[in-house]
Length: 83
Image (cartoon, rainbow, N blue to C red; front, side, top):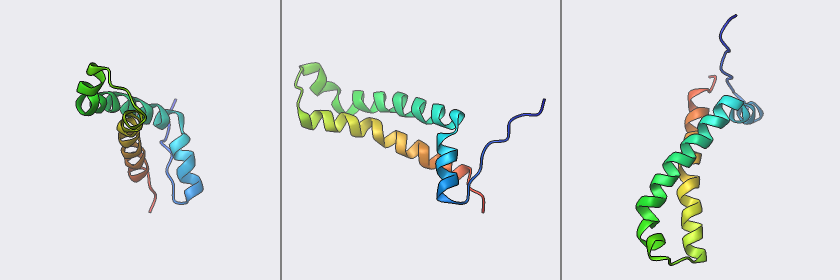
């Protein structure tokens, strides 16, 4: 049995397919959750510990999770691009 060949892309449609590939999606989500949790702890930890919740804080927390998810997505796409 030969190892699975990782998908590559050269068009935007293929890029979506690469991003949606199960192994890549799992990796991206894992990185987003782990790094996002660390960022929330660093950036919002004292506010959360004090119990001060607001819409602005919620937006900041979402951005703390979204940032590493986007960076991981771009890394996967950059590493799998066909020239």
